[in-house]
Image (cartoon, rainbow, N blue to C red; front, side, top):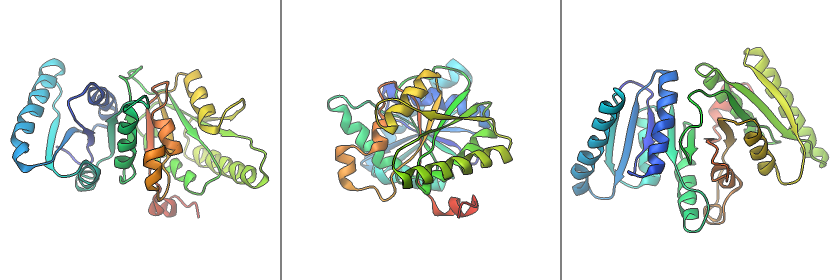
Length: 273
């Protein structure tokens, strides 16, 4: 397996299968390997899980001609995946999850807990890819300082993807929030222009909160990806009640969501201070 692979948490469900389908698209564009990651609770379970996951890998090889890898470890899914991301310097993690209906809301909460520990972005999917190429990516812009870190990842994606980035914001009434949001839009526009990244800017209008407006717009242009920042220092009650980003992750349109955790090092490198 080469450096900076894409890791796909694997639990033998249809949702994991969707994640693998998305991983095929990214790995081909980025020229990196894919590793299916399965976490077991006991060391005695490793062999059985390894045999089972290798059956999947053999089937993938037979059906597609593609070689993928497996990583089976003992531990907690909340820490082991994060540790593997650091160990293998993963470029992305792509994970399948359920929506927020009934007991599936618990799955969404667990997904959020796994995501918030990662240095690399997590792409969370609920369905198979709509397109074989990524053409439209949504970049919501709000008033936060951390929000600018998304720009570093637009640069990362633009190296590989022939996509257009859509900067979206809401013109709120609060004067302080409005000023900070517009300042972030200016910074984002300048960042993209200086790096020759294709983009446009959309002021979102209509009823509903920011998340709802972003998702409606993403649906209207048949977006392939929505980039969001996760909550810094997320609280335990957010896992139970549903943080704002969880509502986006488990969106009813089943749009793929790239979740980016705030990182002080990227903010300094990006020159946002």
